[in-house]
Length: 117
Length: 299
Image 1 (tube, each protein chain N blue to C red):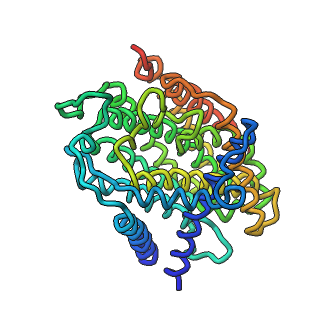
Image 2: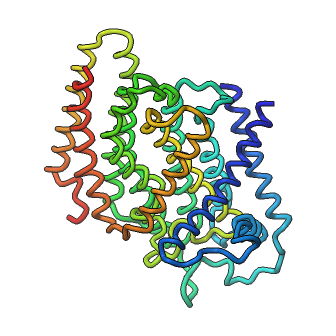
Image 3: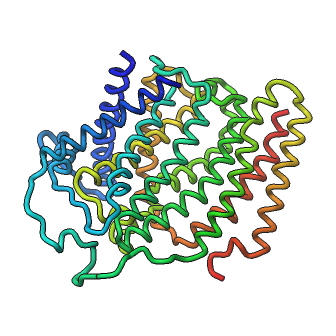
């Protein structure tokens, strides 16, 4: 565990070093105001670009959260199957996946998955 | 010693990614019946190094009303995470002995989404915001399929480690391969699904405002993850086919990356809503049904 943390730190140092090298190599010219403004074609835009966005993405994220949670619940299955309760655990796993499938069908029929509503 | 080994590994990895871009451009040139990069040194062999040097020597500028901290941290995060994923590679010299390498890959791959989200949000441009939201939604919906597939693979090889796929029983995994390939393409934002930078619609996607070294970081991280997933496919699905030496694993990885380039050349871009619907309405039910049908067969 500690070695992995060390290795992450080393990787971060390497990447940071690359950035420092690029800072040293880069040509420094005085910047113009147009260069610093956000990318646009031919005009300058004034307001903030962090606009409220489509709710579709938010619903999709919610469904993803539910599904991922259930998958995390299944993540320990190899241990259970490997050590004991072979048949029972396989049966339970299949029932679990079947329930997941039915919930997906329910979401589908409810219209949460439709992109254009 | 370990740290030196890892540093060398990272540097060679970055070098191989650089040469992979040359490989890609050459292969694309061949498919288009043209030459590809051939001017720099001998048949263009030094092209990627000079490209890297050019990218590093460009001035990188921060947009005016960007969130400075997240703007600077997200390319670093992307590159560090994508190099870190390679720690789970089961090599011969085995730097860290990981028993949960597939789970580690799954976790690190999930965190990669944050770098895209932060990069797009903090650079304060509408193009990058929309690009990042799109690619995050795409990654998320394919991740639900991908993690189901990972659980299926875990149950089939009865272990959490990539190393234990080195057995004949991994031939059983072959029916999972097409689904895995599609999910990998979508997760790494490769060609038929490259909605994070659909050039004609959004300028360059979530990295519109990035230039110089930061652009290089984002680019490198994407290709590093791509190479890793090529290697993972080779190890998981074809390890029964090849001798278990590092040489053949590398040959298999190169062949898989060639297939990825081939897919990029052959298919045109998908439509975004169709992409999302494919994930939720086709791939996820198919994966769950595969799960239900395939696990009892093993009994």
